[in-house]
Image 1 (cartoon, rainbow, N blue to C red):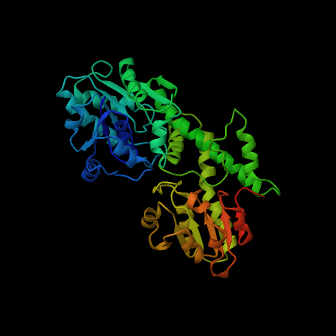
Image 2 (cartoon, rainbow, N blue to C red):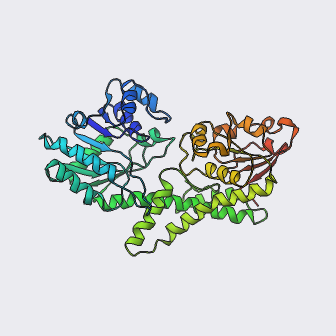
Image 3 (cartoon, helix red, strand yellow):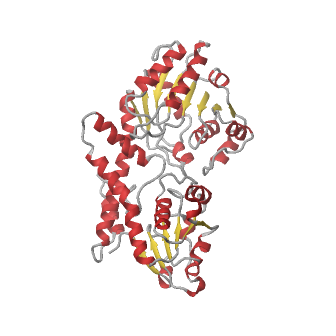
Length: 434
C-alpha cells in the first residue's frame, strides 16, 4: 500500500521504517530538512533501538520529503504523528495537527482519489470529531465519511522499544468515521504486525478516551506499587518485591508495571494522567484516582532526595541513570534528572552518568552537575551512589567499581538491580525494603 507518514520524530520515523520494512511504499514528510535528508540517505534521524535495521530492511521503499503534495498525492492513507504539546492547563494542543490537516486538505482538494487521514498523535477527547474534522473538511472541500476517511489510531508504544511495540502490539485501537476508512487502516496493520492483536473499532471519542485512560491506569499501578514500597520501608522485614510478585499473580491485577521503585516519567505517562484529570474536571467529574496517582508520583523525588541527604552528610553524590527509562536518550520528566538537580540545589557535588542520555541530561542540568563518561568514573569521585534506572550497564557493575580509592560507599539501589556481591564492599540500601 502507498502510505504517507507526517512527522519523522521519535515515533514517526520508526513507524515509517516499520511500515516500509513490511513491504509498504512509504513517503515520510517533515518540515525539518535535516530529518528528511537523513532518511533519504538511509540514516536514522532519531536514536531508537532497531530503527536503523528497519530502514535497511525497507530496500528502497522508504523515502522522505518536505512537500505534502508529493506525499499525499501518491498515497492512499496518511499517518499524522506530530507533537500535541501540553498547555498550561494540562490539555493537549492540536495546533500542529490542525496545520497538518490544512496542508493535507489543500492537496486533496486538487485530487479526486479516496484518502484516509489517520490521526496517530494523542489528542483530547472530542478533538477528532471537532476541530480536526472541521479543518480537514474546510481545507479539502470534502465530507468526512463520504469522500475522505478520518480515523484516530494512537499507538501504545514506549521510547526505547518503539519498533518492537509497533510490531507486536497488545491491541489495535481504531476510532473511525466509517467502516470503509476503518477497514483500510486495519488492512495496513494486518500486513505489518507480527502478532495477532485484537482490534477494537469504535467512534472517535471512545478511542480518544481509551488512549489516555489506558496510560492513566498504568500510572495508577506504578504509583500503587510505590505506595506499597513506602510502607515496606517503614515495616521491619517487609519487601516490596515479595509483595508485588504475589499481587501480580492475581489475574485481576497482573504483574506488568507493578514495580515499587521510582516514579514514572517520559513524554506520555505524566501528561496523559494530568490530561484525564483536566478532562474530568471540565465535565464536572471528580478525578480523585488520577489526581492521587499524580500526587504520589510527584513526591517520589522528594522521598529519594531526603534519603540521600541523610546518607551523604554533605558529600559528593553519583546519580546513575538520566534517561526516564533505559535504552533512550530522552530525559523528559526523568526522575534521575530531577533528583540530580534537587541534590545540587541542596549544595551537594553531583556527578551524573548514563549510557544513552548523558548529553541530553547535561544540556538540561548545565553547570549544576558534572557529567562523566561512565558509571565507574562517577562512582570513583562519590561518597553516595544512587541508581535511578534499571539499566543493564548499572546492573552489570561489579564489586570492584565500588571499592575505588579504598572507600566504603553508601549505595541507594532504587531498582534493586545490583549483584549481591556489591553489598559485601559497600553499604547498600534498597527502596522498598524495611
